[in-house]
Image (cartoon, rainbow, N blue to C red):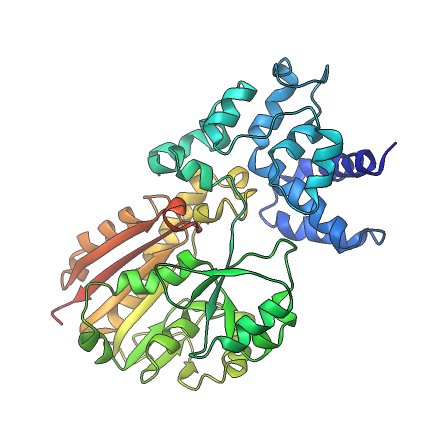
Length: 413
């Protein structure tokens, strides 16, 4: 048996172990990581290869599951199509997958670029790759080019955290990495390195010169604030990142508004500790970690801008975390929306007259997005808030994860 065939058999073994947990384990990526790390015979190249095949199989799971009920497509030169062959055929061309394709799929035609073309060859339906109930939540996800983006590997986006990126680019060049700048954000860089480099080990990262942050996430704040003039924005001096987590948007706020005070809070102490580490690494001085603010102790109506990046179902991250397509249900969405309403209402009183309340999620479900905003505004207790703008950042627009953001103004600015 050739090395390539052995590798495909190893993938089949790994897949058989993981498959029973796909629809029950929302922490499946950690399970996959632990399983690959457990196999001491795997080098870094092996782990990259099997991770690529596993995630390709997860993205296309409904098609793989129906192959046993189908006759092999006419273009398949084998009498029977193994799931591992299909996963390899659907996988992107990488230094790990290409040798296997050349040896094991030599008589296969190249996989077409679009989901519709692949579905036609396989006798499948494009829409089968997404939960049927989700169509009502986000019709655009079922149409090209978004369904194509949702079933491709997510790119690696960085956010520059320096006015002099030359040392960053010099180190990338020395390591043989290429990159491209985003046409929509000057500090956003897509790193085009084929071998999933560990960026945390670079000197530029250790000096805090960049952070790993999806472009869609980077776009939330500029999109939410796009309706206001630079002079109006620079008049703001006190921000609150109410669901700061480990601080991606907190750090971005600190860079966008270097003369403002950025308060950050989160119910998870470990996340705030990570934020403190990241801010110190980048030598950012205008971030202050504060306790959870309340009306009793949090100085109500004091903040110019309150950002509520609410916990959500994560439907916007399905290309990066494809297992969530199978663990997310309509009940998941309902529970998330109820929590989002609670968090939204809790932080609204902290916005000063004339200030802004920014709501964001990494969801594509209107139930967590437009419907949450509409319910907030329909409450008489929030009669002094008006909607300035709301935007869904679809994955295909800028090759990102999916996000939603809404900007509300209290009183007049």
